[in-house]
Amino acid sequence: MRFGTAEAAPGELATGVIELGHDNILPLVSPVMLARGALPGPRLFIQCLIHGGENVGPIAAARFIRSLDLKTFKGSIAALLVANPLGQRAHSRLTPQDGTNLNRIFPGSPTGSVGEQMVDRLLAIAGEHGGDTILDLHSGGELTITAFYVIYDDKFDGPQQRASKALAAQVGSRYQWGASEGWMDGTYLAHVSRTHRKTALIIESGGGARVREEDLANFSTALNGAARAMGMIPGDPPVATDIRRGGNAVHVKCTRGGYWECLVEPGQDMVAGQVMGRMVDLYGQVVEEISCPTGQAWVGSIRRPWMPLYSGDQVVEVVERL
Ligand SMILES: [Zn+2]
Image 1 (cartoon, rainbow, N blue to C red):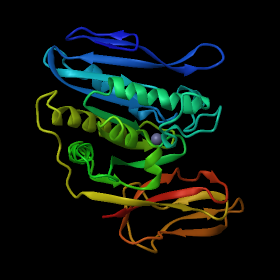
Image 2: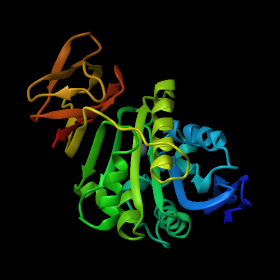
Image 3: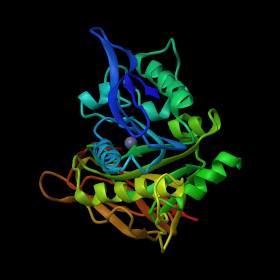
């Protein structure tokens, strides 16, 4: 079995690289890992760092793969560790060369900008190597801190979407978010689900330029849960309690620039009118109070506390409870 330059026989772990595009020097490549169990079974594909700077995913994925006992493991795992090498080099969610957010421009184009070409390539790789199930790992990035949530494509009611929703309940997150909004149409998740008909999830936890043990533990729970749900390793997948379902997301922005004094935590339940934070100017004065604009909701993500922001920057993403 091959994935990029990695080649694994049954019971072996291989590492290598795969080509994603070209810059002006050499091919742009991502490191890859290919873990092949001694026993036949399903194929799991893990993608990390489509947003540069979201470093919990690749660290957790490599740890998880190295923790497996391949003598008893059923099936295979292919991991593409750096889907956006240009953004990662700049610690940026975006691709600096063309300003693209790769997870909003799918399906991309083979003749487009460097970001659009990488997206076209990532989608082709998912079609060829994506196997049965794809997990797209995110972790907020340098500027944003997210709850430990899982997103599945809820725009259509097809077999892949139903399988994805079922898997979302088996990765140990209590924030199970079926997204049907317009932004989903440009995502990797939507395209691997709708075009390649894969069971697929976004799993996200952490951010704010930190990699915390808590976030690594969340990803360990999620990856082991998915592998158990797929029958690759023994044991039952985790069952989350006190579930928060998600519908539409409201991106709350400040109108005044300043320091962001954040008063809420990712994952916190919110009610309409609840104060979420304040903008404070350099004289230490509160220049704006930010309240929750919607009813029953939970905090999907926050801008990291005390980050200096411009007028109009997003401060909190509030997810409506279903
Ligand atoms: Zn992300």
